[in-house]
Amino acid sequence: MKLVEDIPSGQTKFLTAIDGDFKVALGDEPLDPIKYVHQLQNLYFALTGEELIMNTSLMPVKYQKEIREALIEVFNSDWMLRDVDHDLAISMIFEDGSISYESLSNNIDVAIAHGHSLEFQLNFMKAFFKKILEG
Image (cartoon, rainbow, N blue to C red):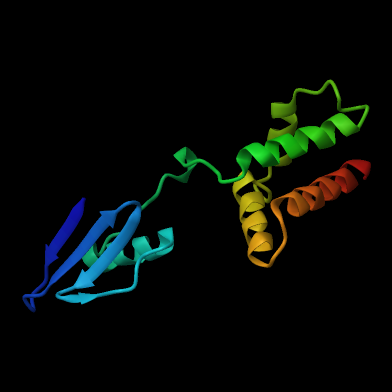
């Protein structure tokens, strides 16, 4: 895939996707690789003058399976919640929008970047939700 736009100075801006990475050049001058969605959105705006809107509801969440399993483990550890519909209980946790699979996944990424393991972070998350359930 290649997006090419001529600009008045005669230079050309290129946006090329290669193996999932985006490479950008202004004329013959390569720019830093795009690693994050917001960088792509900024570039798109610079090229078109319009915002690039991403439908993130269709994108998979990195640790969604692990988060879901951890939450179900928390529910099953409470005798009053063992027989509850897990999907309904999870949707109730996420209902007000302050907690989501995305936010929990982002927190896991931050913890891993700071040297914690996925297992450590999932155990921390389970302890957090157990405290909430205890009131």
